[in-house]
Image (cartoon, rainbow, N blue to C red; front, side, top):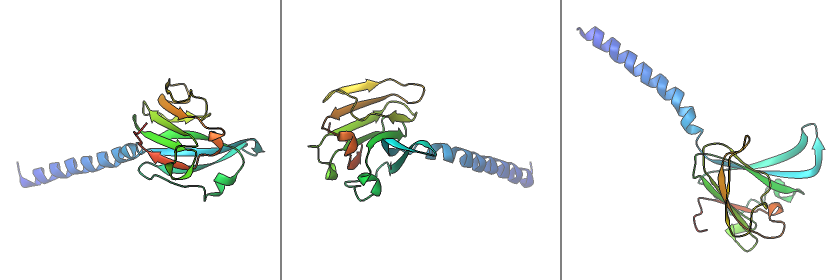
Length: 164
């Protein structure tokens, strides 16, 4: 075995590892969690049908106040989409600065699929609820501290709040 053969083999191995890294990186990056809060209005129709707008929040970036976005002042109610790996957890608060006196909702993913919560107030008050996976949504657990019109007034978001 000459040094030419070893160099050629090493080059093939390194090229293979590089290509594998390029192929795997997007899959791993796709596991970063994101919360999309959609602002919906049952009377808002347009070219898209039931039009709505969303505000995105990424894991590790808590927002104590997102009322400065024009989305907050629009009429309507919020729905949520949560991506990321199992056990990703996020808490939505009905008031700025993570204050709990206007309600809050904890969502904990139980699998790697997208979780879609179309009604933020559809859960029993102050009780953990398991929601099984469906064709359009992954499985998750939720805990709601109810408050009137909570789905219209979400104002802050915290990731992995295990206090509840």
